[in-house]
Image 1: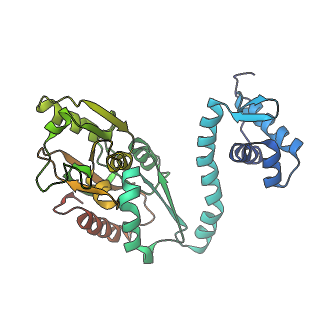
Image 2: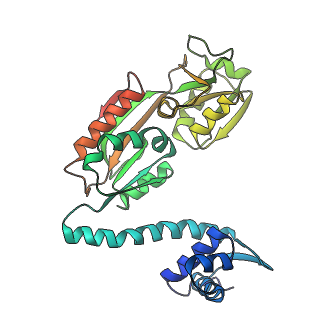
Image 3: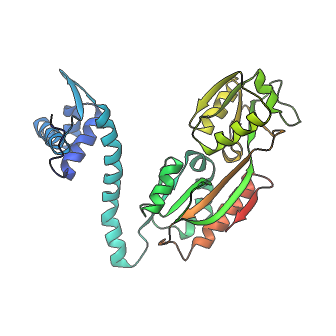
Length: 310
């Protein structure tokens, strides 16, 4: 197949492609779309011709997305989501009201903070609130590109062009299995990782960089490790008795997990998070309410949290 991009994909073909990915076959996609199976096949082939690469691997009756097809599906879902909001936004412009707000948040913030914050301001929210859970890099990108209105994220080193509405700071904590030998009263020293398995965020994240610096300062090299892209996954590993998790306080204290205890560390490892917005925000008259809600929930989740800026 040619690698040349031959044109702009049309919406109907993208809907057919997405249906095939979701339901696993041309036949099932046709049934969901109420069209014929040859029509779905034709639309998918037309889309492949337009994008210039194969979207599916075909092996007789079996069909599965190619690696490029999976990537294109992820991108197409964002485009289709934006298109689905267009009609509602047009109606809102006509009626002079706020149609929706788009929120981007890291998994940590989505799990432990976003829901409680929004519940405090539910009376002033528009009818439609869209929350996308993504990486901190995508949070910043979406705000800079004005494809999102609000962002909840670990505090970034590079936050140019972003408005920091509130910044908070606390300490990384240990999550241990309830009733284990480490489930005591005192702080947990990092030296336990000379023998205990570490469960925490993988390299490439700001919190992991801070954890690594703390280990290097004490000349400690963990004996074994479970690395994940989610603090919640690390906490669940601790619950299963697979090791001791080092987690951000928002996840550890904001997401109730049975069967674990949250313990302070003897080493002080800082973790900062914030609420961000772009300059053209539809909630500009209500941002103070969101800031107050974020502050209240952060203080509720983490005792002695420090609010560093507004």
